[in-house]
Image (cartoon, rainbow, N blue to C red):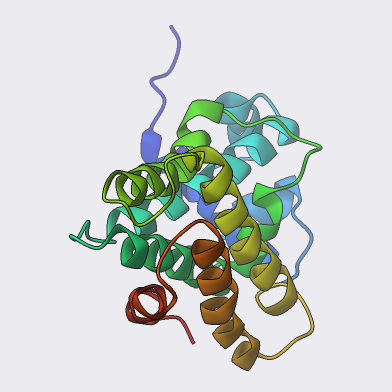
Length: 202
């Protein structure tokens, strides 16, 4: 009779992998279960081996990102919301730099690619709302603008959260996003106020 899988064990192994990454320790079968009450076989029971574990760890990064983005309120100022979502994205990268790095490792598939795509969809929705309110030109593609906004956040994260540059560089997100949104049709002064209000990462 097959044993019932315990979701808590699966979560524990993912958390252990993230912890080892954070500590810059080797992620090995023995390291994953050291000090726990489970055996190395648990990695095969729950993930079919180390490759499956890495897929789950990568997915966990997007799950935690989605949870952080969900904390960003939707306001009557979608341009402010776009900046706030970018700020939340960077906060996630700063809080989980090693997990963040694994999120974009092309060597492993995601368990649920649609769930990962949903994180970008939050930005697309805000960009579409801004266009609908006349903040952006009617010919602006919300997906393209959201992707460009994500690119700015990802670049800053790579330079600061997982790179060599100081956190002070994060302030560059304000002029970069402002320039992007003004180019999309927003009023410069209104845009600067909205982006400054939403950008709360330091």
